[in-house]
Image (cartoon, rainbow, N blue to C red):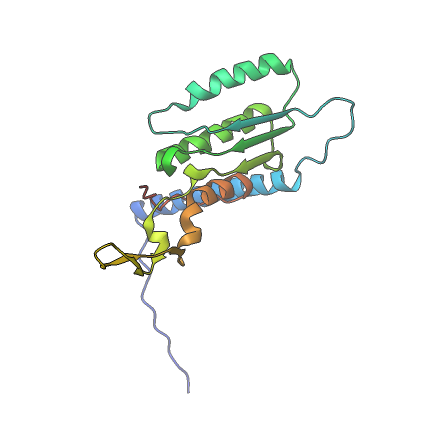
Length: 203
């Protein structure tokens, strides 16, 4: 017994669908090339510096406190000018940045910090393996939602009424307080960037 398979005739692609397909292919190709470039960069990271008799040149920046009101180039350009004058043609060996990166963990502050570090990398030819990042107290979310508080009587006042208190204990959300810094760190060291989608609630 033979079976007969019927199928509907496919509709010819429209100009709009062709345009969307072309844009999708271009986006995929661009992302693939960018990921491949970063993978190659990671694989060919700088080896330990060969002994030359010259000291290592380490730039240490701290407490940048980027905000929405600040301009990247207003911070970057004077720094680059001073470095090029002081280095006299030599390059940086390492870049160390300690927090705070973004003032009060704001979205705009982290975006500016990301751009700032990216531009320094480009200007001085630093690969990610020669950059050290350490967060500060402004680089995490300050919110009660990351703690559970079990209230209980702890003493009595002079009138004999119970005084209620408790010790806050980290809950399951506690480690996500660093999600802004984690995204920033990931985008520096990984081939594929992740988007910033979660807002910081500061108190």
